[in-house]
Length: 153
Image (cartoon, rainbow, N blue to C red; front, side, top):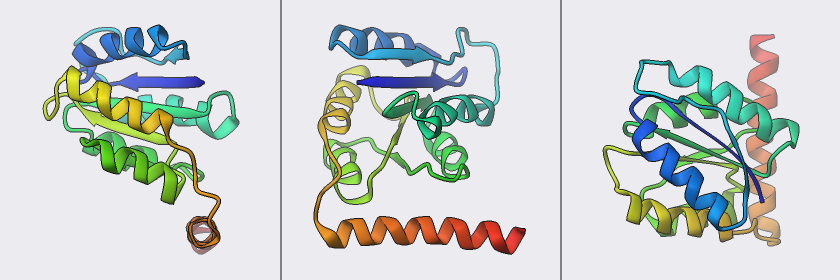
């Protein structure tokens, strides 16, 4: 799978090991930084990661920051992105299966690398359901985005 990853300075300690882990699983990874603990703004990183997802250059995105909350907020501001904050395996796979989530956000201050590995495995192994009611609901999410765009117009 092709994956884009990025994180802010708080997420930096986990991002490198996650990149290494993903590559060891055979994934093609595009790393959008940051590459140090120097402060950066997570919306700038979210724009890069989500841009790759939205353009189809990658199938999934991963964001790592302090709690994952800011990354999820930033990612969900981008039309076509359905980001989830997941610190457990159930929500990581269920979000993909039921809601067609395409970006996973993790908080390095909340979970460690061992749990992150399990969450990533669940997220990347999941596929969007073919059941009509899930597909109908995701289409309605798209309608909400289009309606909001028209209202701001």
